[in-house]
Image 1: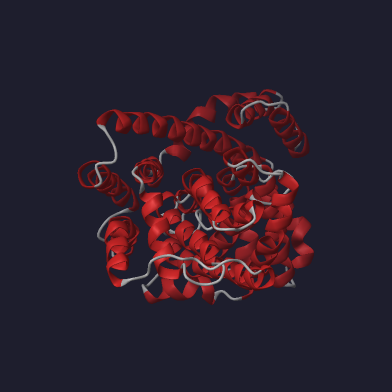
Image 2: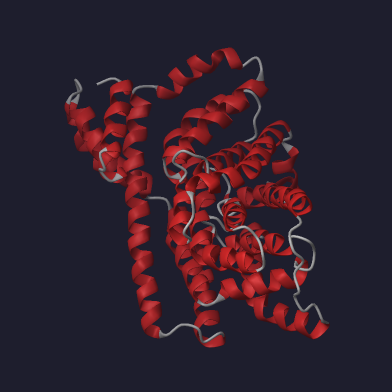
Length: 428
């Protein structure tokens, strides 16, 4: 079975509705059973276990749990109110608040769909009530949610580091500048639209007592990412220890301080997180089985041969990699795209001088933008399921945000300092 047939079988199974994890494992089984060395299938469980036997991966369930606890504790409302106090009283203020709230909340969840689920309906309805078109409000929410997988602590970054053997602390620091730039780019689009379409001013109370109260209410949520990143970068904790500490922090804040969750509700959150973690790790197991096939078929070598013409022009190679991963992000989960194809393009990118941290951030942004790119982009469907929307109108409003993100991707590829400067200050 050639690599072409393997991919046809895999995507065929996914197309007819077979769960991705089962599709990958079944494709791997068929590959080895039809190969001249079918006894390799006996080694498959050991290869999968070897890939999952990485202590960094333990951090993912903990971060998922911490994010779920914080999102269920009313943190979204507190962050929205704090953002409104900071930047709300300008033309188009609610749209800026949307971006800032997503930026802050994404630091807790690290997942675009998590941001949509927690803030989507709140933000869209609040903006609509203030006089904004519903589809524009939804487009702002989708665009700003894409910052989630980039702003640390991020489960996607941790997964990438585990697969590619890259420093978690270095990647967290490398993500800071691009993440903030992406948020500012969204605000630039909003500023243009606000002037063109005469969006309303916000009437938020910005008196000193109101600001102090809003800051105090949101302070505990704002401090959590600071403690996590500081602990990891400072060498005080490992990523796994920091993730476990974040769960303890979230439990204390949600139950003892905010008194927003009962023991019964916490139990349900633990159960939901267990299922979500199992789904994600099972998908990783399936992807690891596919990477073994790719290694045996020397897919990396074949891709390098195909892209050989671009090696003389690093910019062209970076553009091709960007396009490939945006397309992958349109059709598959971000984590899956990174696991399957990250190790394939990495040697090629390294050969033309791309820094590992720069490549990691570039690939993560690519697949994240793909999540909101038609025709599939499942973040779009997540938003449509949260708020009743016309899909085509949503896409029309989203196009300016996607265009400016595409430009930024090219800039990140051309300017390594955007991703390497901050890590360099800390010795990464």
